[in-house]
Length: 180
Image (cartoon, rainbow, N blue to C red):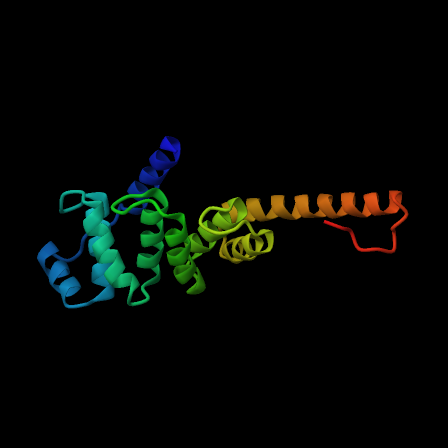
């Protein structure tokens, strides 16, 4: 888990390299007035400790406000916070909820993460077809990890079906569907 957290923080640092083009007070005022983009950006500042002290709980507060307005990036970031337990109690089911909201809006990272969670049964019952569906959507947007996972899953599915058909033939059930 420590390796995952380090990788997450590294990913956040890479993503977080953005320039604040508005003075902080202007951004905060817009966020307080309900601007979802400003709320999302304020969440980033608090999560990455840019312009303000690092504060995961404050980041979650602003991302939730933006996420409730259907801001896909904020929904994704909120899912990340629940997945890793930053600023909130770690809760995979809650992560799935927020990733799903972002994924349905076409957020490639959320689609990949949702596929991963279904693949490994984190926050949801393991479901091969659901994992493949979300990996496929992320892969279509160029997500290399989703493409790799999808290729592996398809390979294992073919091998699994070949083995089931072979077993059926050996048992004299070649006209039957394979039994699980």
